[in-house]
Length: 441
Image (tube, rainbow, N blue to C red):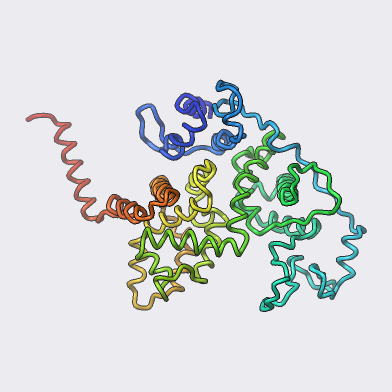
């Protein structure tokens, strides 16, 4: 642990060097000092790296350059005033006016919350209040209405009880701490929407919360990097967990957890990038009309790939490397996510083409392939995928769209080598090495 941190501090004295050379050029994942073998970053070291990447980056240009400047990497990280102390989760008594009103309105169709009390267990307090085919413009979308604290905590508790990332999440103490962090994030998010900057800000009316399923899994991954084996986290590290989670969720929730924004992203970013970078793959995913920019069936798998940032599709080890790159915020998250998906598809181009050659294959088979992507357990070569994603992001952000296809074709020429030819080349290399080792005859 200390050796890793000392090496990082020695090689990358500033945050910018850590971002460019350590993460994007892959230095963090190599042993270094002439040894190019790959290493796995442990959870505690990754937590330290994430703190170094995200610690008050807005203050980089403030103050004099030196050991105490936020732009310089050090062993110790101080969160400063980025987030205040966490506030406890309020105790909701069964006799509160909010609970009483919710139970009384058993069949009030106007109420956004309707509780069924005749022995029927309600799986979620969120119910439809408008006919789904109603086109009345004045009715707010579900993302805009929000939920009360009681209903939000009920769903959070249900989701946390089913979190299977690690055994520690089944411990009551860990559940309670995760619940507290999530509540503080939702409170911060709610008050940010109202123009308030702190969870400790005073307010006149009870806030409405916008929790969505999937938040708990993203928080769980961040929590795991800071947790000890027993699941405990030091008090100061709890603030880091909240800060990193909030920084990641700000663009993630805005672009991928709001349906209209997800549709916009698919149309204007993902579909366009895929079409420009790999027209054959675009035609496979948009089969009815290769000129189309969206297809409703693709949202079935895109929702999971984007909202959980590849947690279900890649191994946790590979997912964390992708998250390392995302947390540099070198590119807008929505562009980076699209680029990673395109890069993954390009790396699996042979498999997709082979599947589509089957006469019985259709769009449903392709969707099933994307939904079952993680079950194959086949590594994607995550560093190579992220390197390609970087090139795609650079070309996209600079408006050099014609370069997108060239990047993917160069990647294919380098990595899509015929296996028989590769075995022959490896055999020849081994023969040459043996001849050189034996010396002149």
